[in-house]
Amino acid sequence: MKLLFKQRFFSWLDSYDIYDESGDTVFTVEGKLAFTHTLHVLNKMGEHIGTVKREVFTFLPKFGIYKNDMLVGYVSKQFSLFSPSYNIDFNGWQVSGDIFEWDYTIKDAQGYVVATVSKELFNFTDTYVIDVANPENAIDVLMFTLAIDAEKCSRK
Image 1 (cartoon, rainbow, N blue to C red):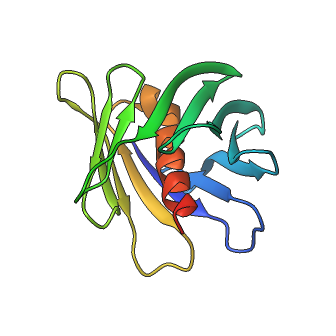
Image 2 (image 1 turned 135 degrees about the vertical axis):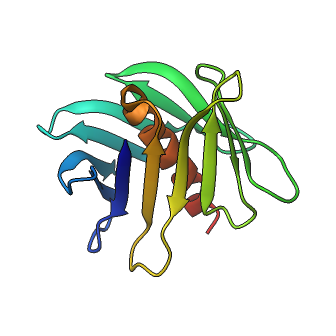
């Protein structure tokens, strides 16, 4: 399953539309003014199904992942010298990326690819293509991608 993750052009807060291969909107993401960086994920009917929220008192950036308001795991930036490295405290998944932080691979505990995430260049807004091996993992992969994107933005 392929998803196109595209930031809205005119938005004061982080807002994204996520499209399927047919061009239909399957998720929307709305940034909220809060004490911490908080993103809410809505399904195509506009129902809240997930939240990505930055933890406040951590040395390296850490984001909580919530499905239906229940904490299911964390995405944490790990210290590394040359290429970005993140730890996902959920199902044993790991994320690795290239030195420019544009492409990511998410693997499960056995080393199988769960998803690949690639940034499209030459767009006016952040645009990613997410290729999810199992469509049941789409919402989790989307929230992890949002956390990684939010971590990158927090460094700017």
